[in-house]
Image 1 (cartoon, rainbow, N blue to C red):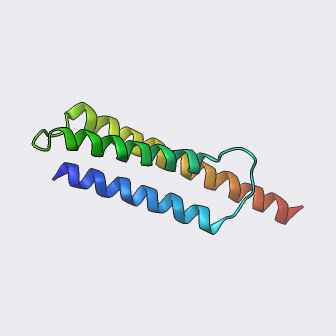
Image 2: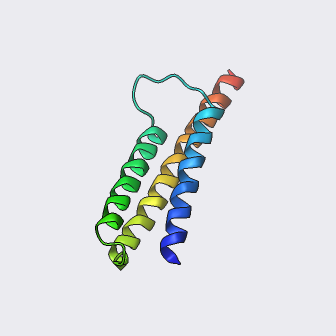
Length: 96
């Protein structure tokens, strides 16, 4: 059941990141944190699928679940900070 919750959270994170991209189109020459997080989530999902294909009966280790949880929390924090930065830029432009 925890594995299902983990996959659901990863899917939600990916959707949140994609929605954030659609809401605030900012042209940047470098890759934004959200794009990097989305790429990392996609790579992690692919790696997880490869792992589960090798031995479908094998359950993820506690370490793997902890790593996935921490990765999820990091990605959310990065996205939250990026949104905060963008809001600050908009407020600065508004007040100037």
